[in-house]
Image (cartoon, rainbow, N blue to C red; front, top):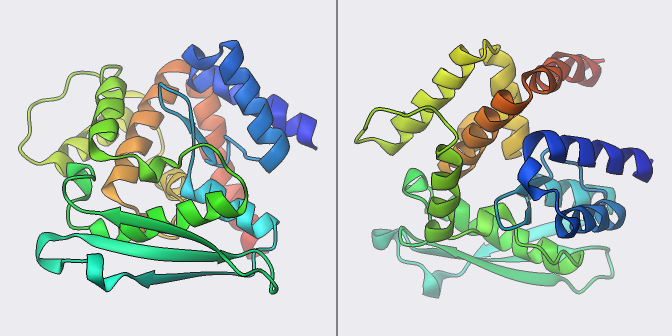
Length: 250
């Protein structure tokens, strides 16, 4: 089972992020697959120029596989300021009923999140806290993509955007991302409903409206890159979603 997962991960990594395939990238992917059973197809891992990042989806799936008994979060009032949109959370992960807990902290404010998620700092802070606690609990040495600060995220997004067709200037960051998504769908003749289902899975949320704008931005860049390099592979991924829905309903 692990061997099949590793082969699938390597195949998808080659098709999506061909520039990573140096020896260090392959070795790290092998280690993450063997130790934690992360799946690229399920959105557990993302390559962002400098290396591998785990996603909130991947961490939650790992916790479920490991039979984590609970995650508790609390707002740290003394470090919060609603007027300036500064929020801080403490998260505690309990791996078993006898576990004393692994604690992680996360903060967010307009200075350390992407412009696209301004107004959602509270959710970003809680997600970061949960991710850090899960990484401690299960020995995950790589950072989660949701923890990336504004400056780093802007750099990654700008690198990804160079691969996309030029976009007209827009005063609304969110509108620009939507325009890029719609253009990718039209250019590569993708099914919008399947793209929405994939986006929901990729962002690790039950409904796309629950995703942060930072997550949506990462998805749009990822979708455009994959569509350009391997449209057939992307279509196979998209076409798997109706089958998954039917299996869940059965």
